[in-house]
Image (cartoon, rainbow, N blue to C red; front, side, top):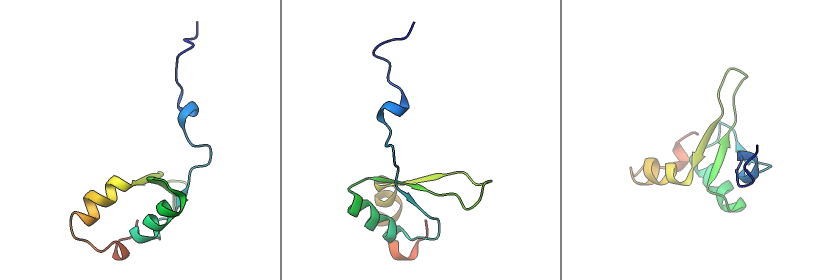
Length: 76
């Protein structure tokens, strides 16, 4: 029996997630997030053996700005 109130990941996930490559900087990520009005990006794999990653607005605030680091000098 299926619960009619059950929520599945596909019901709430974005159908076309926005990705960024690992060779970009945090500044690049910020610009994409602002342009797309989003708060996270999927970090694409370099090859089939890599895992996908995610970078979030919160990551940037906590690990870049709060530490006084230059986002244009930090690669994803």
